[in-house]
Length: 482
Ligand SMILES: Cc1ncc(COP(=O)(O)O)c(C=O)c1O
Image 1: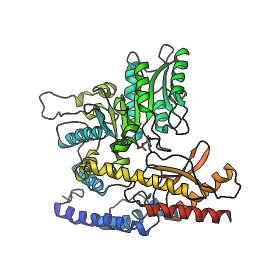
Image 2: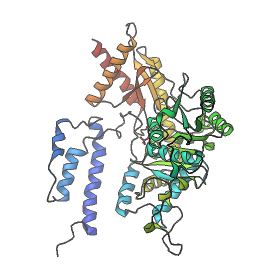
Image 3: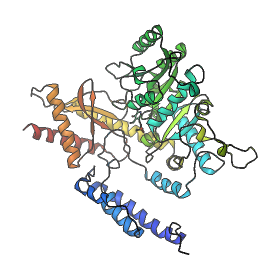
Image 4: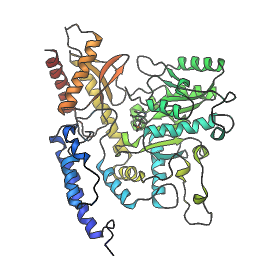
């Protein structure tokens, strides 16, 4: 009989594991020497090799990874990466992911350690945000899935009859409407679409100059819908928008939802964990009253991708939304297997990886206070950048930073340029910086104007990186106009 190829003896695991650890350490060591964003370009041909029929030694495969994969990152571990809301990963999380994969439990349920770790992580995250500890939660792949999962629970709870059986189609079914600000993340549009509510029934409520929801407009929209025969059901409040970090008036939304018997969902994928910062806490007041809450440990707990979290205030509502057990999974009360939480009942997925370990080991290694301080530092850096933008005559700030996002544009003084010209040149500046690998940022559009958007969820960024960014924007801008 041939030796089983897949079953590495422990000594071999130790040896190959050490080689892998060395590859990780070298990768991090060399990050600063290389472009922020590692465009693969013509080397993409290397990845079009035919399907390997026969294997190669692990060392050879690892050598390829060291040469052709690790040097071409998206860039989010680099101190000069400010795109989207893509955090720098905590190395503790990377090590935990390896342990989790080695153990490889399927986290749908049962009385094994991973389930207890996940339950504990959920309790800790709720505690960080000030959300009720008894809330029903589940870890999911990220903010999109966290919002989808919560909105599915909202849809079930807010639809008369049994929406799981009856659906929403047909003349006698309620026409649910959902409300969110015009700054809401597009994953809410996706969820409303996939849940059969339809994006035509998603009302985008205008925001003011501060990009926060206008709650008087919300009240008018709900009243108009009731008068027109719709069934207003859900209000999504942003606890940190993706564009500017704006936090909707969550307390007012909570009051309104209570008085109108609506479901209040808070999208805190990006911002909710910033409520750990004492000076920001008042901005989040009301989040603890949300019927459901989404947040993302892969953003502001710096956990490696992917991990998001969903909470529903009243225990049992997630299970009522997703429970469906076939015979082969029916639990036997006399079996020693069943455990405290049955996660497969609380979401879409049956087989689930051990995402909890990276969050759990991170929190145990660093402690809550360290996360609060680090988040506070990211926010301080965005403020520092905004102040520097205000100080420099050739820059214009386009939003007030609330969390760790600064929005501004390069606008050379004394030179008449239309908004369209400014949009063009600012976009070109971004393409140059990303293209030459000096910085990574992605533009957004605020009230019709293209902005240089700098989002910092990055424990490696310093003030001098941000000063260098402004210098470089200025240099490239002048070159483009010359
Ligand atoms: C406010 C907000 N909600 C939802 C999401 C979606 O999260 P994910 O990319 O983890 O699916 C994001 C992502 O940036 C976000 O900022």
